[in-house]
Image 1 (tube, one colour):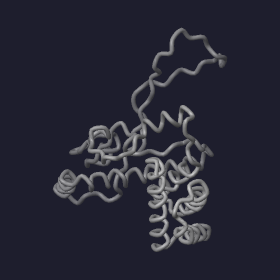
Image 2 (cartoon, one colour):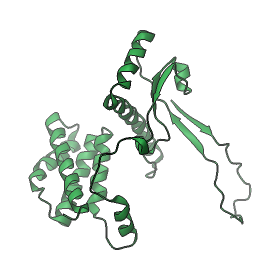
Image 3 (cartoon, helix red, strand yellow):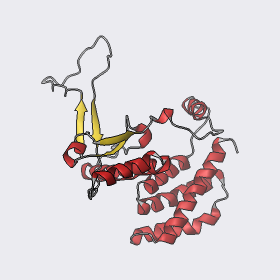
Image 4 (cartoon, helix red, strand yellow):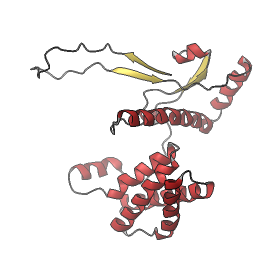
Length: 236
């Protein structure tokens, strides 16, 4: 269920020419709300309450619920991107959401953002972040300042990861094949052992769906490429 909330729509001007302005004030923008509703209802209020209580006690399970919902939303966005031929229609992530909630209630109410009971996840900045030696802000400054150039493989591996996380193994396999070749050319990384598996997965993707073994090999290859890029960012 998709809805738009917040700011009023701007009135369309009859005059399509550029207009002079004296200041660049903030523009009111609408807020989009996506509600993913499970197709099978709980058998009782007690079952629903117990389900939410289990999620309250298990942070990983709660995150998994949000990840599952995002896959549904991103699947719809993928179809919209294909239907409109718009390459700039971006997908969503939990970190970019203004707020994420998990709860239950009557179907019509949930579709309007009203719950009988719900949990609101902490904002990304308030959650525990895994410590890392990487310094993305410093590297960003170096890239913007022209002191360093990004690798072509970095963007390609990110796309392969996004496809994997979104449940698009065929696209991930084809993307990973190009990403691996780019990484081998740019860094000479010790990833040759994954070439056969990635090539096999990509060939399978051209024919149809990947089997479990091919998907597992592809996943391991993407992880290995991510590790190689992490070493690159750390100067290794």
